[in-house]
Image (cartoon, rainbow, N blue to C red; front, side, top):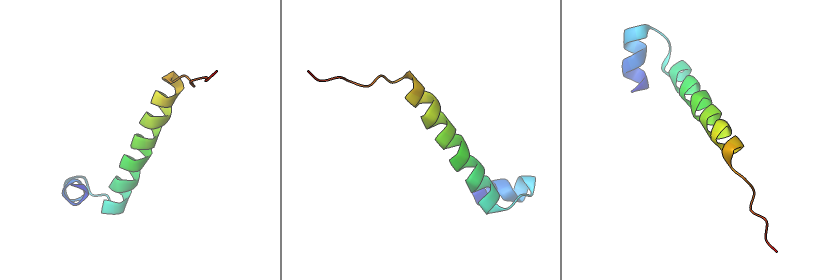
Length: 41
């Protein structure tokens, strides 16, 4: 997919992959804020 996007928009494939990885990481971090740690007795 990154190859196709790079052909259309003109950035390198690696650049698109890095952007996707950064976005994915930001989503995980955002979702992690909503999680609560379980406490065991």
